[in-house]
Length: 178
Image 1 (spheres, rainbow, N blue to C red):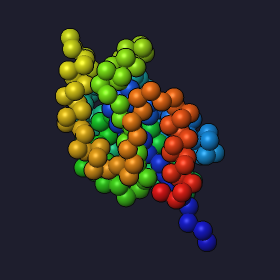
Image 2 (image 1 turned 90 degrees about the vertical axis):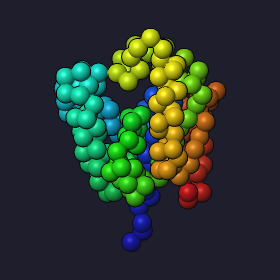
Image 3 (image 1 turned 45 degrees about the vertical axis):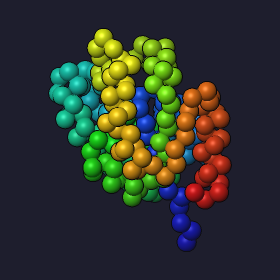
């Protein structure tokens, strides 16, 4: 009996390209792709911003943990690529799930690159509200960087790279048996 490859989980701040890269990589590998934020939206019936406003961040994080666990359980039977929310690493349970259940890749980029990408999209990001989203991103980076580093099997700087190029880099690692 051959061992199935581990699922691949993408972590990083908003704007690093997790959702886009996950879709491109999954297509390249012939694997399904799951996006934890999209699954939460399907489960809750509304946008993440509404969930934050009506139920709070703690409720959102609890759903996120349940969704991550379920996605990794599914991926244990058929490998998949998981795009996670930027704050997935905030809970110790999630970090443990990622470390034990997936080949985890931290997608990163400088704050100015992230801000440009985020401003190009109309999707509301509840944790980036306020007068100075660049400062907020820097604060989130300072809080989360050690946590991303703790779960990451591989780190990729996505600045200046197309999703296809990032996918090719990851695919190369997978083919080498990383």
